[in-house]
Length: 166
Image (tube, rainbow, N blue to C red; front, side, top):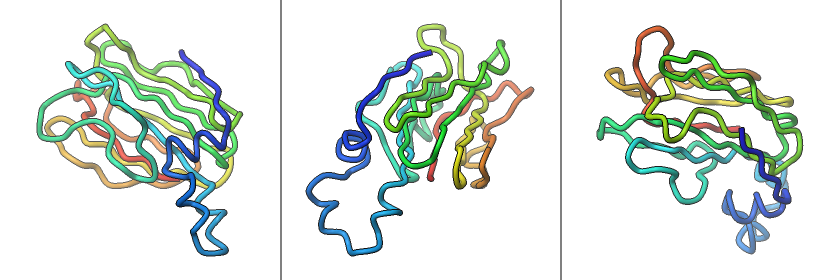
């Protein structure tokens, strides 16, 4: 497990597109803009993607047949963020949690050529939405709840991409 701490301002500004442009948003939108989940994927043969994507963007690949092997997540204004992965031939990992805004949670494996087959994500306040692109299946439906599970287990099918929204 890897946890990194950065300030919530840094998460908003660097990871989730905040910064000077955010100040120009209309009044009343600050609450929606402050609540964010940002993530990046480690993909077979490509490694970690540079930077994080936020607010429902795609992390990983589609149409290339490349498995997603690990996932890093960070959030602001969702309370405690917890995640765990179902790794090929290993099963479910232990929950990894971060309760400080900007703290990073990492699930899955790197350097072992093992795909993430499913991901479970939980937030302390509100809900989280997620959907997975699974090898041989394509995009699953979006699920939204305080805790969501996407992907498959028991079928030997790796996730190739994921979208997550607060």
